[in-house]
Amino acid sequence: MDIAGKKATVSRELIDRAFVAFRTIKGAAAHLFHAPMKNLSRAAEQVLSEVRVGTINLNAAVAEALLMAVSRLREMGTDVDRRVEIDYRVELNRLNALLKAAKPARP
View 1 (cartoon, rainbow, N blue to C red):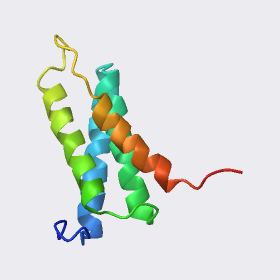
View 2: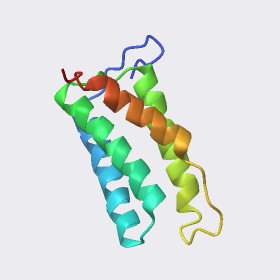
View 3: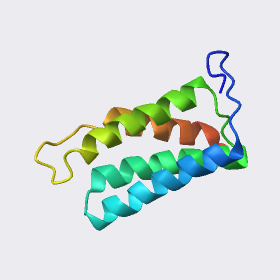
View 4: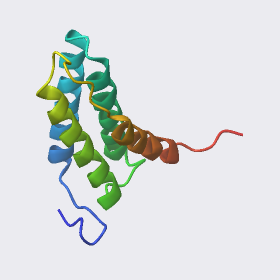
């Protein structure tokens, strides 16, 4: 993957595997009634869905946003009983901004 040159060349298989991983986390989070983890994994899954269809290009900014989400999800995963409230708004807002930018404006 060449993200240093601001253009990532990643196999479809790798994108699909990451998509499935986020979907699996989303399902597990829903089962545990862990809304923050579910919301963040859903946003990451949606970004990868847009990458899959070509609406979002996988570049350094997108890769960084997804990796930030992974990092925050790992942190949440170490505290699934939610003894500590983990702030995930920065990561969620970043992913949502990517999704918003990918959607054409409605007249």
